[in-house]
Length: 135
Ligand code: RTP
Image 1 (tube, helix red, strand yellow):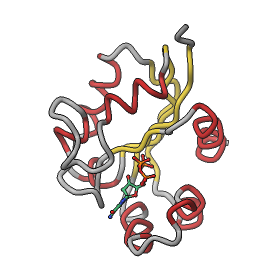
Image 2 (cartoon, protein in one colour; image 1 turned 135 degrees about the horizontal axis):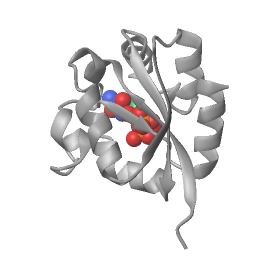
Image 3 (cartoon, helix red, strand yellow; image 1 turned 120 degrees about the vertical axis):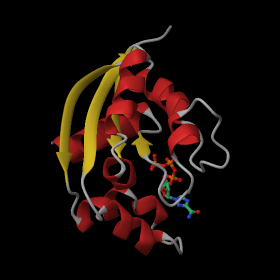
Image 4 (tube, helix red, strand yellow; image 1 turned 30 degrees about the vertical axis):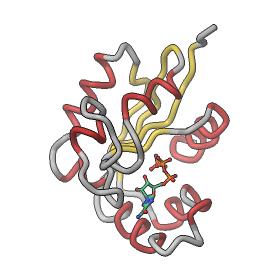
């Protein structure tokens, strides 16, 4: 049975810079999910390195850290029925080239290196990320 969940969502620097924040928030709210907390901030390098620690050995890691600290992000706690998987569906595939039209990445992103939005991939990681970013 679907349960009410909380997930961690972050609009990445490319989308904030391109003034897509409002349109992305609109899609989240239209889907029936609720924004519990929201804050615009610039991430420090250490926080990004911890957040993407599972990718530390990838060749694109330095550019990922540079991108994620390149400007403000909008971080959120989003809640609702099956919020974790519902947001992953709304977001679309990690690589925008594979993301279906109608998804956030499918409609707003063109490049896997700057793919507009982050959403927790499990309930367990959602709790860890909410603690990490909202403490
Ligand atoms: P995210 O954590 O940002 O929501 O992304 P994800 O779970 O869908 O995908 P993950 O594998 O955790 O990748 C994290 C972020 O790293 C960048 N990436 N670049 N150049 C590349 O091949 C590549 N692969 C991944 C993306 O920004 C991705 O969202």
